[in-house]
Amino acid sequence: MARKKHSSGAEEAQVDMTPMLDIVFIMLIFFIVTTSFVKESGIEVNRPKAQQASKKPSANIFIAINEAGIVYMEKREVDIQRVRANVERMLAESPEAQVMIQADQGSKHGIVVKVMDQVKAAGIDTISVSAEND
Image (cartoon, rainbow, N blue to C red; front, side):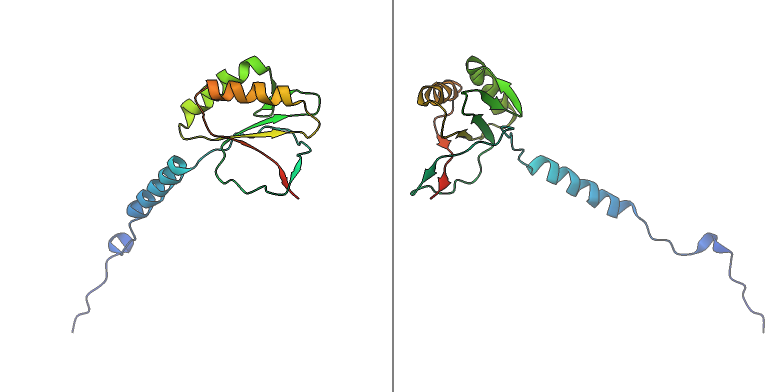
């Protein structure tokens, strides 16, 4: 009886990796598209305390005002007159963005109002002001 000889490694079964790589790239694209990027203010402020403070999820644009009245957006100092242009640019990147103003408890009320006015002029009607829960 003659034995049939197996051929060399050329006909061995191989796992095709192409479908798995396709799925990985599709998942990568999905996560990149659905990720919302947060625009941080860049400084730490001493927020005022409030008894009725509540958590507000999903703020994307943070504007900080320190005790000296200097405005910060995206980790850099911004002139009050340029807040509107910066917010409009950020809105172009993510149209459903919301603004959170983080004002130091020692900052002047007039500067906070000017910043809020610039944000409203950029087209955002709902503005949140950050406070610590008492």
